[in-house]
Image (cartoon, rainbow, N blue to C red; front, side, top):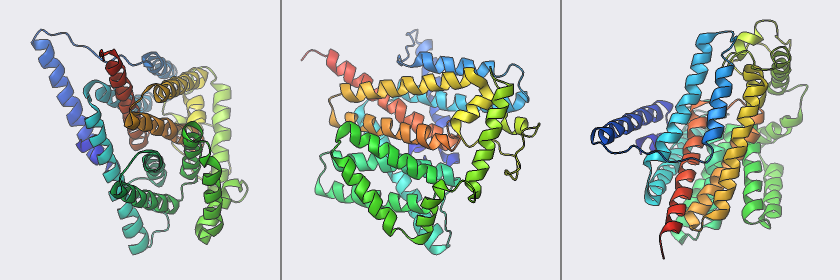
Length: 383
């Protein structure tokens, strides 16, 4: 619970909560074994895809430029995988999931209030980031904006709940605008369109009209930021990304099978792949897919794409399968957030193994798995 409450407030708090939860799980497993009982783990439909990704990353260790950096990169991915299995094997009820979800909402509201009212209006910071990097905070905002929007529009709430959800959604959308992370904006728009397409297609034109009106009447700073998305010549952020993407493809061209080693983009970039329009070496390629291509080659990227496909297929099937309204909407939010964050924002930002983004998405995926499993158990109970 503590980990979820601090998930959008502090990386350190989230790490402490996760560490304590993992320790408690290990102690629980030891006690079960000590009693002579059988230890059982929840069967996850995409276990094979996770194993294939892990294997693809290990293959990238062969000939890695910096073994220590590869170990650090492997550790980042192991943390989110451990978190995933920790949640899947220990969360047992819908009531617990609702409490965790509520704590996550409280967490992002606190973070948004701090960013909007303290950072922007009091300190005068033009691009708010709360306690995170701006791109990471933008990803958190897009995730929770999608979830709150889904439960506001599609759940059967009371007037009080609708008012609170509406306030929260407006606050988060304003904060998202002030965050100015264009990839997060695109991720929110794409995830929202996916949501409406799956659940209520007739809302898509309304959403797009509202979006157009907001763009037309947005403050000049926000409007200029929106228009900069297509400026590939003069916008520094854009032409820097283009340079990094070019380097990624060049690195892949010379290391097509297993790349230069996970977490070794900076080392490879400095070894002869520098670009004149990039003013300093970056630790990643500003694209999850091109970063994996450069660091882990075709094997790593293929395993990542297979994992994404497997997770999304499971979530889509779960959304169609479950009957409980909360479970159905939660899985829908997870599906749309996964696409908005990893597939859309991930095209321009290397966010798969980033601590706050990766932990949040995989925590939500784990809860979605639990909801599907609980629904399956309910089906097995004779009526």
